[in-house]
Figure (tube, rainbow, N blue to C red):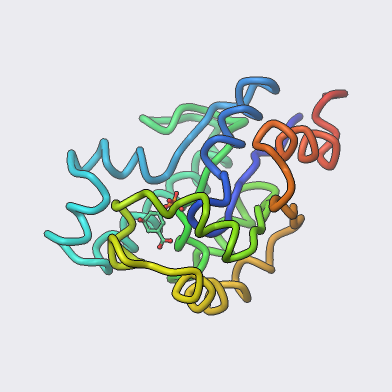
Length: 183
Ligand code: S3P
């Protein structure tokens, strides 16, 4: 039986898009943690940060992981669908609470790694990044935040270097690592 897949990494690493491609091509239920939280709270992530604060958001992330760990055991779902699933984690998720252990318990964890300069190029035109202060982030501020988180990200089971990969190529590489084509 296929095991669940978890994609982690900094904002702009490609978790959502690569996750969608893999889920579609290899028959996983796709779960995007941020979208699920926005749907449940009926607010955007930026609104949750500004109205309820970051701790509230981080606790919601952990709640989802606990539900997913339960889903894995029980093989039944609520709005979380069913196994096997592919979870695209929020960029900060691995760095809070005991989330990295929960993530590893849920499925095979892949870290989509990217250089701060590459991340900057990918997200520079976006303004909905509350942990980077909305507008005005720089490659240096990205590098600082990334270095705080790297020790969590690197606990992943597999690291995929995405700097030179398109999203389709990253998905292809993951499918080879996980032997998805033969399953
Ligand atoms: C965050 C990353 C975002 C989202 C929230 C916080 C972070 O997810 O969860 O804005 O702390 O890095 P993406 O990485 O999917 O953009």
